[in-house]
Image 1 (cartoon, one colour):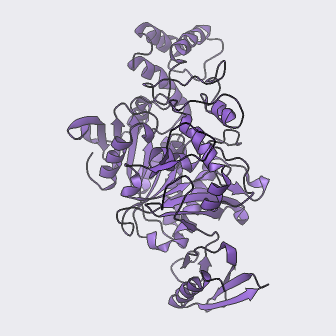
Image 2: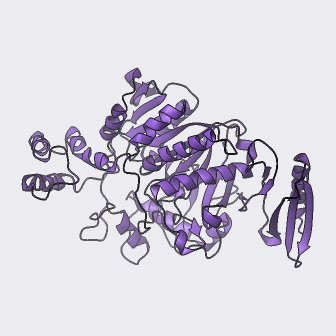
Image 3: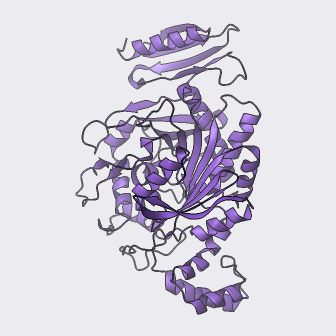
Length: 517
């Protein structure tokens, strides 16, 4: 018998006994070990374990039966503890696991995740499930560019494997984080049948809740930890819906009960039309358009700059003038240069140049240089598509084709037009804490639009607009509300934490520990 399986069998046997289940195992076809736990009602849970696949199995019981221990369940996917990653020198200085969990009908959707334990006190520290925006941008973006413990060196790529280095301001220093590739078709997540590729906002919310339930069944040691749902950018549409799903599930007594304490949103999309409309007053506030143009736009377009009446030719003409002023502005962080890539008009299109970069990565065209902010995305693509990397991460061979940081071609239904009602419902249904924060130099989702929808909730203010500090320097401004919501800005930061990692970490560390910013 494989030397790795023996201790696993012992642990599973003890788990069965602890929960009054009978443990059995048998060798099938000489290569597969069949593990069975039988309850007093003679119901069985069977898991076939191939010798060469076994790294770790987590066992839990009582997940699907309310209020009692009646059945045993084994993980529907094998999680793997990763000690070494190609491109990183030496052993990883933190605990990393990767794996899949099947969700939906017949578990045809296999969601891939990276789990990193808190470097502080994982037994008690908060557990966060984190979604990247897009939609359909991979969790590796958050892990390697924004809030995780690794990032890519930006030296010129020479055809070898890109190098990884540790970061100083990872949020995993004070919290355990599940970085989830969601929706299906994102990152390494895949479906066993093309019919499962029908992702949507509401579908993603339901599947993320199901994922979290099953993950906690596999990892029962985290059931009592404070749990938060987090994300940035387009995740601002989906995260409040996930919180509502969890809240409803807890009300109905679904097991395991999720110890949800709140949610975290960075530069969140909330109402797509309102988010876009806020760009015009933001451009004026930041000095990108003149007073005269702004006043004319307000008067002529009546505050609607997204769906302009085609007969309103004056508004359309003014919008052309506006576009001339901002077309060469980097919306992700208006303070930095816009990369000049090899294209006559590389930043045209729905995704502001990101789909063009995707084309570059997949072709032999001229590539961005190391001084371009997109360069790390190119390195990530080379790294994540390397076969040694995929083996190290235990990605199922043949499950996906080319890995993409953002899968803009994914057919995704945006069926939540505004997440504001979800915020309102969540504040009524549960005593949840929430942190909503914005980089004040982000023009993709301007902070003034975020302020506007928060104001529309009509929550009373408990601590009005004030500066918050690090080392006696003003880092941003904050306001707190009676419903336990905190809104914070980070000075000179862009769309994601990668632009101000230290300040973003200090904000998170204070808030998650219950301290004022």
